[in-house]
Length: 576
Ligand code: DGT
Ligand code: CA
Ligand code: CA
Image (cartoon, rainbow, N blue to C red):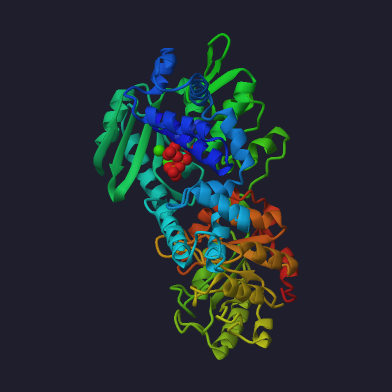
């Protein structure tokens, strides 16, 4: 940890204590210490290594102890305990500009508000303005701050698909150098997060300085931020920040593990290590008594040393994976080979660029057992949606093609609009004639939470509906998710045995990992679909699988891992 991070942690602690209404002296001590630390010339890390923490002025003994704890473990015990006493969403609320601990406490005590979501609901229901010292203006200001925060959060982050392309390009360029043995992806990109802040790479080489030179001199580097002995940092084209660490083989496993993160996962691992009497960092385990360093050249050795099974990077978020590993209960994550077909595909009948035949051929090439052709319905007037008459012709055409193809089953389907009032674009009579019915919201996306939730619930309660596509409607860089009560959607989906989609388009990735995990935990099935509009889009399935893996999904959780027979039985399709 560097000085800024340590100071920030003390500031956070002060805010937590203030929220809890603790003693002002205690709170001031943390704030003052944070200020002194920010003013230091030397890094505490360095002082610690040289055993000089005692010489730092303006900080009491107790807080110095906490600094040492942070340097060794990434956190400190009283912080961890305090954080547990405060609902986790409260910390997010205190981070909203203009809202401090006192206001957060007021909202919590008077309105039971425990998260930004709940705060935003309370403001929209005009419950904030009725509180003491609050009013209409404050209420509006809070809503504006929340909206701005949401955009800032996405700002500067890149969709995984773009980051992956850049990372592969860099890897190719660097691997041409004779002194570089390999380049591997780490950080959030290796964990397959849907967006990444920056790209983290590890180069394996015996010549670190030469490797860094190659890195900072790559063709498309626009600015060099750091060029150290074994680490570099650059701005690459398209405004990508890229970090590189050079590592020798002996501690490759330790470095890869550390640099893959997440930070929260690493902090948890370090705690386990400390319990065993070791400190853990990117170089390996250090025995606290003897000072002896144990390097891991394989990543799995880091986990095994702690008595854990190796775990896929997608799980490393400290969302229960370490506990699951300790009890041998890690999920067996879904893989590409488990996918048996694609249930959301557009053809030239609406706004796709390929004919049904071309799509069927491409699906056979991929080894699929089935695809569903789900062209748009007509209400939005865009996307060349099908009228009732054309839909009937579409059904006939699919039936005719099924006679032709032996290697694949083509399901006749629709992506039917859910209108603003929750009604569907086609009559039940018509929907009944289809093999599969996907429904989705494409218009009126600004509806308030209540109406949007009711609208989707109404669609889920229609007996002919099978899947809801891209359930929150978010599009990176364009619009955030609709305001919708996802818990309610999940409950209704479960009651009615409906499937929620993970849309694999890299601009959507919707549901996201946390919502998909929630759906799984409530027994709801998911379908990983590509929403293909051109045969190349079938490849996007990998991005959907990434989300599914981050959501802990196993084959049983995913509709399109079923073989054709199982699928037909689940969808109630009699004709095979
Ligand atoms: P990003 O870039 O915001 O999408 O997310 P990450 O996870 O790639 O974060 P980044 O690039 O800041 O750091 C890469 C990894 O390095 C991170 O996942 C874990 C490790 N790391 C970075 N800072 C810390 C830290 O303060 N403590 C610990 N324990 N690990 C850290
Ligand atoms: Ca990163
Ligand atoms: Ca980084």
